[in-house]
Image (cartoon, rainbow, N blue to C red; front, top):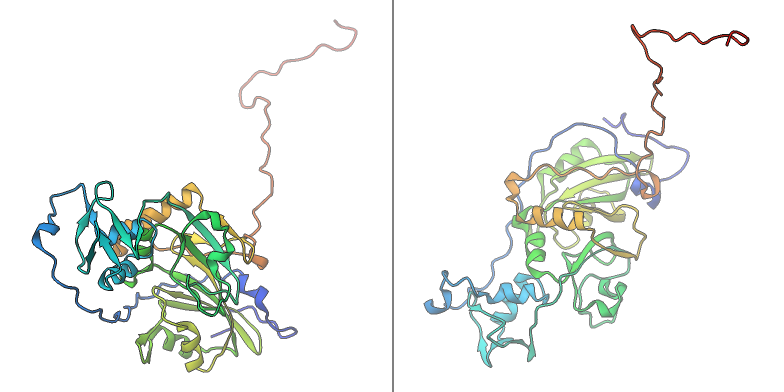
Length: 344
């Protein structure tokens, strides 16, 4: 079943082949269910007077913290439950309380929260760089790739230290929550250079899922892009990211991952961005991302797969000039007879 793949017996595949254009194969895959996320501890009860849904002048505390760029909404909820948040000097440990930053003083670890200008950056993470903002070992972080004057930023989701590719960096905690949480079904597309040539049965195993300590891991879709005698380029689509999920799944079926690169995240594409570089999102990209985040996953249009050539360049466009039409009159128009020289 691998006859449709480009084979190269003379030379081995390398990391540059991760950007090989995918073969055109119109095949729809069934959408796989995601593994359940672990249960969190039950928050304490919130007084009814603090849950006045009719009061539109105030926002829920965890949403305000996320909007201020502190962290994702889920992490902000953990800050509240841990007693790190105060409102007008009073420690808050319950979720759902509504606040107004203009009239109330909200602090986290003693530092007052202020709304910041929203910033959105696309980063091409290199290997050896970690996604977390706090690292006691002093390893290089993704946020270190951006200038410090950009303010407090964090990554949306994570890539492990040995992986590279697209990461969204922002201070918009509300948007980050909608893009990172598994229930919102945001597609992540990866290219993996693996040892050996996975068979169709192996790819079906990945789609059906494999059981690990955390639960069942499975991919939404997987296909072969290019293959040689000893290695293969796979394209995998996931809707949630467990710790080293792709590496662990492929190791279970006997194919070690030698290189892993994320090339797409929702409507965002990595494109030609150099490894280790960053750029702000364009107005069009930001609008698409916000629309994507607020749309019901069941009603979203199918995400188009990234199509790239070698080296991450887009495929060459057809530069053939259109046939030039004559401007001379045709049909029943009269022909104008010019006088000969000497007859004028």
